[in-house]
Amino acid sequence: METLGTILMVAGGIGGLITSIILLIAAFKDNIWWGLGGLFCGIPLLIFCIMNFAELKKPFMICIGCNILYFIGASMALSSALGGMP
Image (cartoon, rainbow, N blue to C red; front, side, top):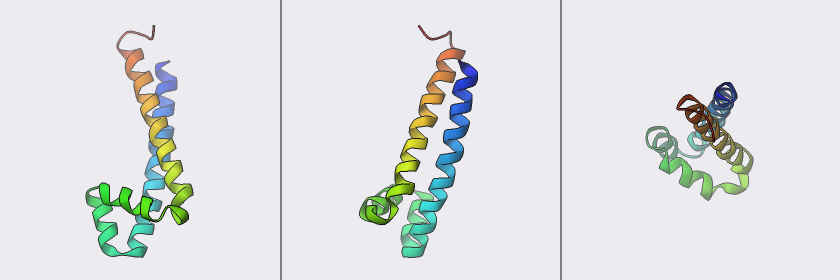
């Protein structure tokens, strides 16, 4: 179970990183301040994605899905490492 959790973590992490870069590129194309805010803080990137949801729907939803996949994999790996799942 620990190996499956690690695989899910790696897949979710790589997918989340790639889609976050895509969202950052879109923010920098719109305005440099959106891009810098998203690069250094993260909350402005979330606000930017919500404001421009019509054009960023696909990468934003993929990013959310990859983050969920990452946290599921992390919880599986951690629970397996700490003593197994009930």
